Length: 130
Image (cartoon, rainbow, N blue to C red; front, side):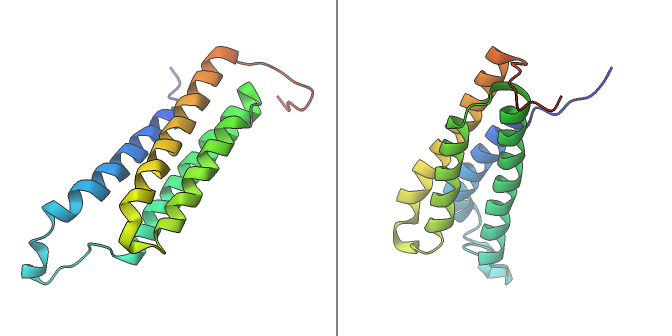
């Protein structure tokens, strides 16, 4: 039996984990400065999370596009979400208002990509290399 990773499910999970992190982590970790630890709004951590979301999502979108459905729409939703995630780093006073649509767009892209892959399953076009 061959083990396969469902990249859309992983992308959806990562997006939901990111949303939970952004909503609950400040509440949960507000006591850490008492112990000399401060990771809330740590730029390196935020950039790392955005890079992780970009890497997982890009691979998922590429795989679905190339091997299955050949639809650009999931790419467009995903790209808009990633751009909003990056933009929120520059507008700290309103970042929650940018974060919510970013996460919704990324999750919607993964759901649409997953559904398109299941519907088309293996629709071949002239540009397929498999």
